Image 1 (tube, rainbow, N blue to C red):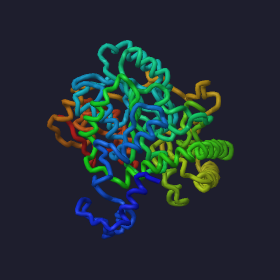
Image 2 (image 1 turned 45 degrees about the vertical axis):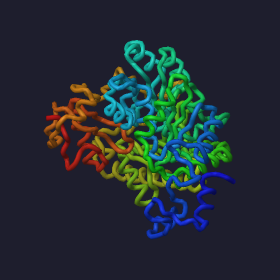
Image 3 (image 1 turned 90 degrees about the vertical axis):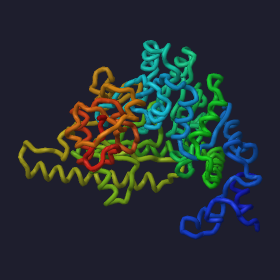
Image 4 (image 1 turned 90 degrees about the horizontal axis):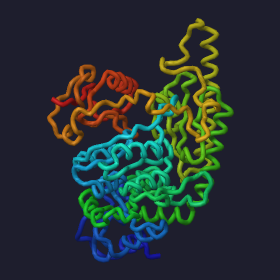
Length: 505
């Protein structure tokens, strides 16, 4: 077989001496190099060049593009970040305007800063108890374009979101194209959808639903190493030459051959086994949700609703037991040796992928059911031995009420939705343009003294990497209170160091 890996393996077994990068010269001088040194090379004779592919790398990219029926597919060795930077820079002119959800990934904001692009925000609805933002709706996009359409150069939508909420890309695409502008879909968490055609429970990839540029992280949901991603272009509204130009700017000029070989192998695996693995994944995922919600009293899982929630994003909470998401994740890590993608105040997020077998689902199911019984005993003991006016948990914001009552699930599958027009989104006014504020001189002050000042950096939780504050936005008392709670609970808040936040002088 003449693929990237087989060619690298053949070269590693030959007697050619490497008078070229990388510096380890295929010698296993460190433990990590025991794994990759044999196939870690640079762009040498007959191994193609990702910046201008014409051989094995072109073939690998074309194979994926042909499978999906898109105009062109690109391998990305700098993750989805480089795809988002490239996509936005290619279709929005310097100083232009981009329509986006306010909770978009930080790479979207970085692209706007670099290119002096002004944001036009859509504010997603909120899932009440879990404090999770929905995917944007066609109506939200349509209303924003009706108000600002003549000034907007492109639209970017995240679907699935970090927590797995799915947007109606087909309707959004039709709306966006009626304005003659391109739609970018940040499908970083949806690479598996490229291989989901005809499988119940999965939406089609945005590539099939009219998106002009789609960016996906292979490493998130398919068997590919961290940092591997792809970008697909399928539109006459996108200038391929501009895509190539900006990709040369943002992507490393020394791409990793082991990563590229792994990307091709991941795509081949999904082409051959993806349908089978995705069917299994949905069956076990839905069974896990049903078991937890049937067997547990104090631990609840967000229900799966086809077309609204992505398979594999298992969101669960012990708020009824008075436990924060971090409390719950810490117990599951220490007692059961289970490690999770993310935990926040309201919930824990577990990710399942095509690589998970029975053990993954069974261990979590057993742990949650057992832990729920422990919580029940703890609460019973507390009620038996404490006064009637007793706190039911460690966080005063939590109530002993059901998080996902069936009566609160709408026909669309939106659970406990609060429309963004009726909530305090805690988003602040932009006093300075973001790209200007990013370059302004800043001073670090104690976060408790920051009310009324403007942020000089991006501030947010990581993961997921969506900003709470962006440069130029005014810091409110509500921001300070929320950020202090995150810090006190031990969450990783980027942009704040030793209790200090950088503000514009």
